[in-house]
Length: 154
Image 1: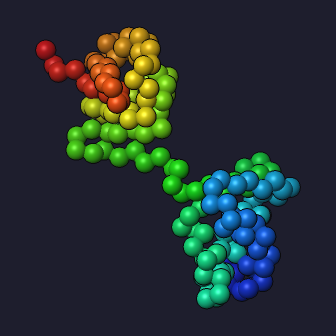
Image 2: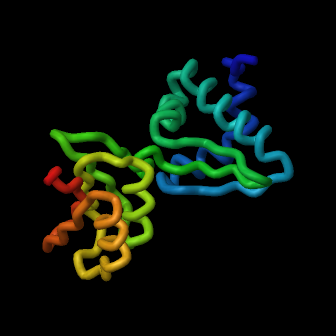
């Protein structure tokens, strides 16, 4: 099923799109049929692309991710989606702040060197060090981040 290109599709959800445009941040809409509303919001954004006077609304597709989940439509900015990408031999994992989160990320990614720039350097890392020692890693705590890297073979 493809999205409508008519102005009626935009008018159907204009109030929601106007709120999204005004806030610029995460916004939620409570409804009985969240899947239907999410579809109509995406359709309204798509329809706005075909009318020059609605060009500001057409940019919403690049700014928001629209999700339906159990009676709530969540529109969250695309910028908050964490990007986990290997960079020059190490994996930088932002938005992980506690020891349990670091441990989970290490188990999931298993990269030779993982840097956690948002982790608190004053964190109690004893649990993390126990896991690291048992799995061939070492934990390095600096003033600005925590690094977990694979130990050299002896």
